[in-house]
Image (tube, rainbow, N blue to C red; front, side, top):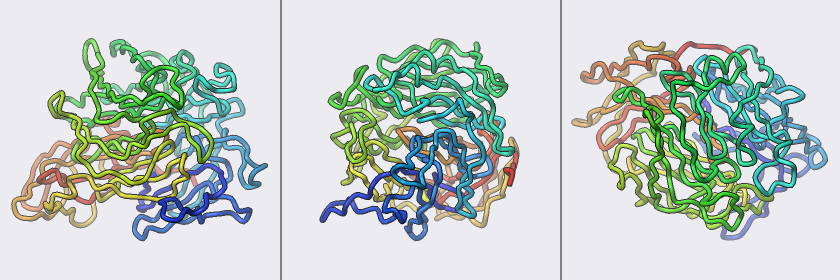
Length: 511
């Protein structure tokens, strides 16, 4: 997770450090406790490329996480008690933790409740600024090959977390989760624009629930949305596809569209199953929604999809065979997908996918991550199967054109209320007009999910020499309150270096 101080918070699994391999990209993890095992978190300083180990008392591996409206990451659930391997690692299944980035400390704020452990849940910010955490398992169990009885382990519930008071609600049933085991861990969740309802995707199904009623503890289907057809193959962990909400644009009324990208090619997949080379796109505003299938350049599972400021989707990392999971250093996903791919949502059908991009030389399979940075590059990191400790940056094509960037002058206003004017002073090379202004919400990346990832195009009211006036999003269903990266997008889709701006009401968490 990229925090406002331009550091990245990494969460890790307990494991013995891998030995250095001569001539290979892998290296020994230097961030060890006194007992000789790796710490469970680290802070990466983007400015000087240094890591600092972070002690997290309760195991955060397989947690759900999101950046709260005040800019502090919140971490829900995790892994069971590992104190036998490391006395510092306690049970994380029940924990709710806040990462306070100014002091670089982790604080356990509350618990999910004695009946609500969560392993591989998903979290997302609602229009109210509260955070919903849903799904997961009561213990590590998931998929058709799980040794534990999955129906008994399935957590078919949700809870609402108020980050300001640090209070969490009792658990309430979420019907789609009860109906979609055993392939329903890390279910994709998306706050839908205009309605404020929540799209929940699990197994091979999707359902829309009334947002206001969820905040009150009841899951009620939103009848304004037509029934969504099932896909042929489950797309949740461990058959992990990447699922994304496409950019929201006022030009089309903030039409909500989602894509399921890759994943397993068949149901009940195993380590020998080829990954899927199909993406499926759905317009939720249609009277009769239908999935549109498109062919990707390469098959992929355990990959990441990042929204770029030019409106395209970057697909990186992942494997061409297998499923998620496996033992540390020996994952069930193989045949690395080294070549990134790009998807242009506005291109004609049949020409949206492209792959004329530089190959990676590092295998990043299960547990790999990807994050958009302020300069428009994409950081990629991690990888379970190879114990990959390196960090790399991918430069999208817009950074290689040679076209000058627009430059935001000075510092943006701290907070933009909904439907108010944002004034941006900027400089540019002669003839390099600014074509768009976009907001991108920083994501929490894990298991092919980019939790809370969201992009909104702003309406430009007026553009004169060195100044742009644009309108903040109309309400919190379009842009849930919180921190966004604001990019100016110029000629050849070249973005400025972004600055942070808080959209909506300014809240301060309890201290």
